[in-house]
Image (cartoon, rainbow, N blue to C red):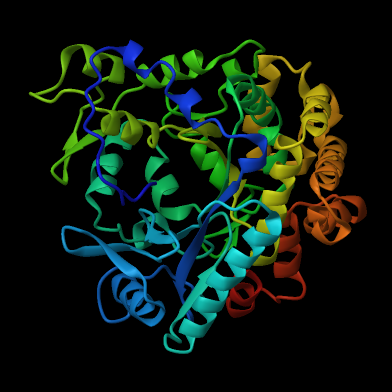
Length: 454
């Protein structure tokens, strides 16, 4: 949920027209397009599986401080509380509201580089575990053992204001902030047309992809009845700023349409001289027109506001794909590979859209709300989506193969585990987790932590 690390841009916005062309300026040449990974991990007590507290000698703050010293990261603080660290290469490791540890890696060009970024980070955590035996880091979409009231808040001013604001906009909003974990992938675009087509396709298939990578079937120490409890929770959180925006599956949508959407969403906060100021739900469009308590809108305010949009796909200075549960460590790169195969290959993008273009808005929304419970068993237009899911993975593989310059650089190898899983069992990671819990793991929480851990 964003850690501010740069200097504010105090350019005044005097009219909404000043923002026209904002997204266009971040277009890239095709050969300059990159992929950025954000991945969240749950820190738990190695014996109980319960969420770690923030303070204390074995708390999250102390652990991150020792981690930063061990690997020469710079400390990032909020009112003297350590809330993140930054490496010289731009890698940021910070805390989400419930103590989830988020890796924000610098953008790279290939999935092989994404995998190397992950392995470097995993190696650091594994090395550090020798100095911190009481902690395990898990990668799964929902906290497997702790209840909401057992997870402490990270003392970050942004999160305090956000928690208060969202508490009135969805009964599960605090569950979203404290219990969930996700993998997010960021993509560049070459033009407005390219960006809006990519967004249309991404919104069109994201529900199906959420089912392919559903990994939220176990929480509070037992099966929870969901394929993705994380997605169920998000479906109950702040509908004006999250979820499936079906309007952007309509052909002809523009950057101006997305800008208009953003301008009409209520603001949560602004920052002045490092102080966070609640904005009490003032729409950004009105903030530009009228100001607020002596404040005038700046470009930094707008960019901060962009970071509080939480739909399944969103624009900042790039396009961010948000709708997937955190995967087991060996499958995170598979998720990045899937989306790169679709979004960075024109033929794959067209083929993917062909599979979902005839869905109505209502069918898209119904499917999106069925996925959390039914996963790959959900039905659209009378047909199970598991076959459609397999087709999309195959399309992504072909897209990656066309992007590869040599056989040695064939990124489609990262999709092989997913293709094999869909071909052999048609099961999501959520179903596999439950099967393992009942069989090989013997309903043993320590074995389950081994299964999910870095």
